[in-house]
Amino acid sequence: MDPEAVRRTLEPTASPEDISGSTPYDAFVISGVRLDSAEHGRVLCSFVVTPRHASSRGYLLSGVTATLADQLGSAVFFSSGVATSGVSLEISLSYVDTATVGEEIEVEGKLLRAGKSVGVVSVDFRKKRTGKLMAQARHTKYLAVSSKL
Image (cartoon, rainbow, N blue to C red):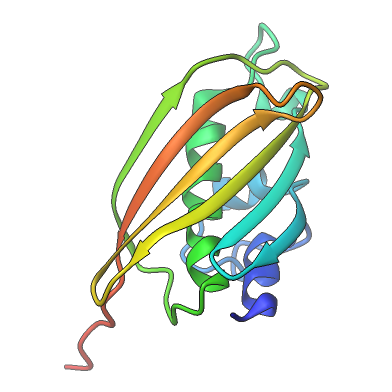
């Protein structure tokens, strides 16, 4: 496990250049996310829903949740010692509750499988105060190292 690789991926002050494969939107979303713990195959983070993460009605945007599932899912691979975060093959999300501005959300990513070429993680979003599941993601990535041709 490379804790520094995990921290560099999720560091709130990271620039888009520091976040592997990121866009300015990724950096915008990940800003403010706290890395609470990282261990082999598991990453735990939290953040407070702010107005910039929310719709005009004050609800957490589904695109923010999807971006966090992508970024935090990649961090789980780094925490498990995989040399690359890979390329996304599929991300599926189930939204089972809403979150509003001011609520603190806990995000837990767990490695389900890391094979020679494909890896899978799950990412659960829970309301920190109640522990209630808000959203659940499954992230499948192609992990094989690309050719040097």
